[in-house]
Image (cartoon, rainbow, N blue to C red; front, side, top):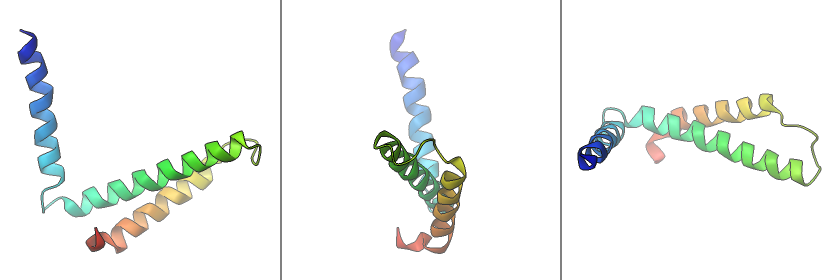
Length: 81
């Protein structure tokens, strides 16, 4: 039935979240979150700059640099989270 179809993804989601935030995987989770937040923040800033006509196109090299800086921050500062 439809309840079984809903339960399977919810059960899988709970299992993934539990494993991701487990003490053994917390370092990797923090690094991935730092990369994602840095990338999303830069893309948001670039979209704002694009709509304000400050830049003419998206600079994905800049986004890659921001993602790398997020990775570095996640590695060096992972215990601050």
